[in-house]
Length: 100
Ligand code: FES
Image (cartoon, rainbow, N blue to C red; front, side, top):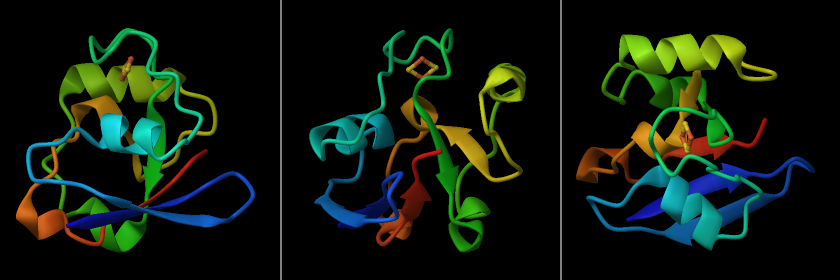
């Protein structure tokens, strides 16, 4: 499967992924500047990505803990997610997310 990212300059980057991969790991492997400082412990929000609206509803809903952290993330919007909390599945082939 493939996922697509838009970096801060608007350049599109396509990465290969497998079901079960974390979106954060795929984004980092593709060279995107996501620190992921807490390594998925939901303590930093440096893994914040903005999901394309057409894909947002395909994701399992965010936990209350994730929502709380997103409230503090710079440039957060209504389709923001913490990429460390997104595990890819078949139905997400083609997902598009933007670096805030
Ligand atoms: S890596 Fe820290 S919240 Fe996702």
